[in-house]
Image 1 (cartoon, rainbow, N blue to C red):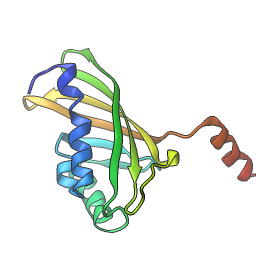
Image 2: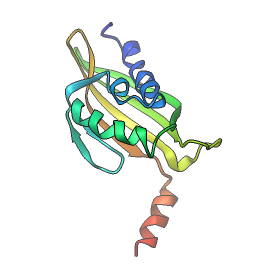
Image 3: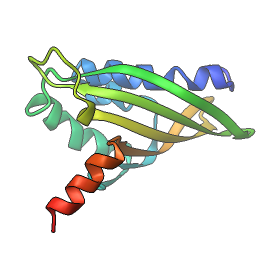
Image 4: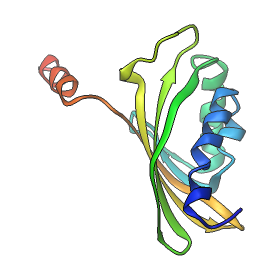
Length: 143
């Protein structure tokens, strides 16, 4: 693997393929052993083994058959040699759904380092993309 922005942009595609196959080990194949992953609800997972242990049961039950679609990488940036960021956007489609719901559009910010002769994701932050109007409606509904 090469230390280039183009090589970085292939990582989200591999993550999506692992997700779409319901395979937590494949989903996390580009993660460092000591990754820190923050899911869209704000839960922090420490370590690749913990991420696999959390995701595989979810892939086997409530998210079984879900798919990541409309994947795009708006930017990659090598911040300095051996350190990079990737911005990824993707939509989650649940089993049996034909249309993509805007409420299931996510963005991910990945921080990567070059180690073990490859790019490894050391931090991943997930966030749900919702319009400002929706956020404001949720705020007013909460009281």
